[in-house]
Amino acid sequence: TLFEPIWFNYVSARPDDTYIKIKKINDSEKLMGLSKEEVITQLGKPESTEVHDSVYRYDAGEKTSYVGFGGHTYYKLYVKFDENGKVKSTSIEIYEPPGG
Image (cartoon, rainbow, N blue to C red; front, side, top):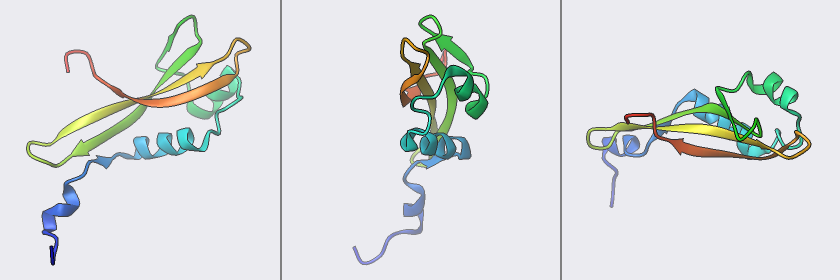
């Protein structure tokens, strides 16, 4: 096309500040090898823990879509620890709120 409509800039989902911050942390792998205490120092207390404290879950923000009726996609950061209590992996995953 010769030009893009003004609304084109709003078609894709826009991340909030929390998502941008957590994505940078995840992508940089700066948590790798840290202890649980060091992770808490960096990110604060996790909102929940899973599998006998071997996984910490944190809010990772949201993206807002402006297409159609719009909508929000929510994300969580999962920090997984090895048997020595050191971070072995991190991932950001879509989170479906209860009843959502």
